[in-house]
Length: 437
Image 1 (tube, rainbow, N blue to C red):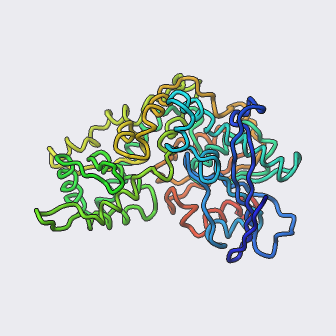
Image 2 (tube, rainbow, N blue to C red):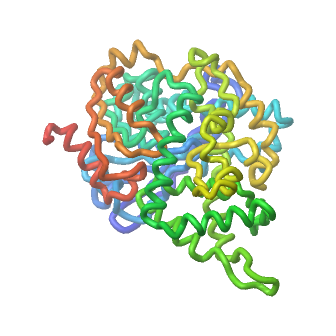
Image 3 (cartoon, helix red, strand yellow):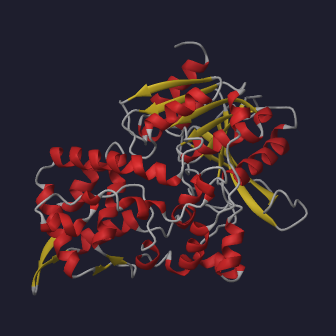
């Protein structure tokens, strides 16, 4: 039964759908997928076009609106919006260490999770579209980051359901392997490190001091996790957001307190680090991350812990070497490493499952190059020139390979531009679609 709520400027309605775990076996096991319908207050009864929001990730649930603001406020000017909790996230039959334990051993868990990639997410969305809108009514898509990857899969599988598509920071490389992704990512992350250290030159020594301390004495986090030097370097995830460099700096400046036995890492710092590094609220991001690049036709489909392997090609990210040579210690970025499944309590029970997924070689292709080359759905994409997470060159190559794509290339925003621009990024794309730009 649907539940309707009224918040400042918006009306929301809950929807829960039963969908097949494996869409190739529609009579088999079913899971739940949750979506929240949002409409501007006073327009509940209007026949508005629908906009499906595909969240970034993988493994990220849709945002929880508190009112009419940000990109959602701009979208509600002309659409009825559906915020989808992609399968396994939020209120959609969660997949985590607690629930996956009931699936059986690691092999059974890994097999279950093969149904949690973009191809299955798109099939869920199509089923929902037909139920909510009817067989012949199309909707618009808004794909942020990984949601843009899902949008390209949607246009490969079911373009007949899409009226138009907006993509922000999410035009994936269509035949880019996981190795290729990280081979271009490490230099971008190095550039973000350099920019951070130019902005906050005192952080060079602050980071070296913390890294040197952790090298000899890894520190336990409040949740039972372990802060090693490599885990500490993972704070570089922050550097891909517009305010991330400042957030990192302010975290570092409260790193130390004077304890009974001398300087020690502060509780404030450790709690802040845990908030940034823990995967407890989104374990699928870690477990499924490299699988989003797995395709049979690309390097045989096996991702094989690509971020870890490719890192060896970039010795400047070796903290031990940096400490020994008086060089800045570099933070890493959007990389998932096998040792995370040792240091993070939310991931430890999923260690063997993650290894099985990393070794898998039969991932289906996610993009149909022929269909995309003949695409008739208008696509309007924001490409962030300085994006740390998604390679701009890859995005522009995809824009050239997919018919009917119009891009806006900008360095005004970082990867989180949709979230932090107050609706400006989406407004630009909508105006492009309406022929105003």
